Image (cartoon, rainbow, N blue to C red; front, side, top):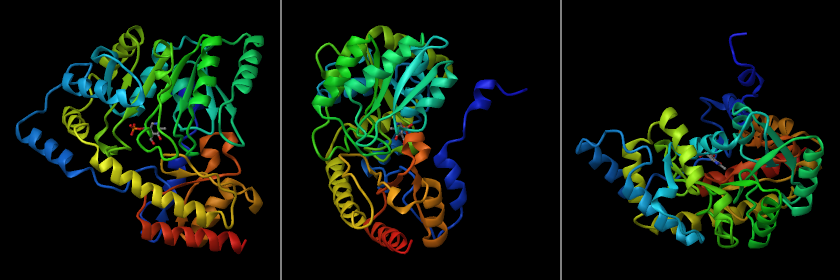
Length: 383
Ligand code: PLP
């Protein structure tokens, strides 16, 4: 076979697969893709245009621009983390950050614990790194509890499996659930007890509504065993500019830097310049956050009339249960699309335990959201 067995074994992303169905259909309102509907703030675009005019188009240091790393180190203090410029590597989006974090720590056959439902790339990237994705369901409230994790780890140990790390993501895609200090302490206790690295995907940190985001690396003793992943795609609506970063202790940073320098070299320089400008002000963040909260409150209130909905703490997703409809996630999403022209993502795209749920992204303007939600309510009522 020409294709590597590892690659051949991967399923295509459940989100993309579903969205092939709506390409070119202007009549469909999409609550599908997790992409902010806001434009990149003008001051950031202006800085990028100006840098191009000045001919800033070269490679940067493999680490990323020094000024950007200085700004990131200053910025992360707000989430309780004190790190130096040398603890940061700028990446091509958080997507690359996830990849180099996993590849830098896994030996062949080692496992990563992945609480599900979760973002679509964690398992495939673990498999591509020659590892085992040890997924487990966190339903019904989508919180990783100490007792559950210990049970899974002990079972894995009995089976002779070595767990190297756990990946967490909060506020979470797809559930919108975030973790309180208590939950983070439980995860930290578990990581210490089992001597694990924590890969903490904090891409939605700025979109925290119910309580303030704290990085798990801020808890006592945790910086040394945590790889923080974050970036500019969601908070600053900079998805296509592809800029993110990893923050980690020196040995892990050096390991990730090795992979980054061979496979990516550096993140796009103009995007790094834009990211420096992004971190100069937080004005737009407050505005976007307010708008997302307004939309969240609206969609939760309306959908609760027909579905079981947990109020999300952050990000721009809700993950209602559709179990009362008797349909599977895919049946629900397909029927809704064909009958009402509204696109949502079937929950099983985020792992088996997402079955019985759908993900709706409220990253569309209020008019569209009202129309889409009205159609969903009508759809469920008529089932
Ligand atoms: N991590 C999570 C949890 C996400 O939801 C996404 C994008 O949807 C990413 C990472 C990828 O982000 P980026 O655009 O920075 O590659």
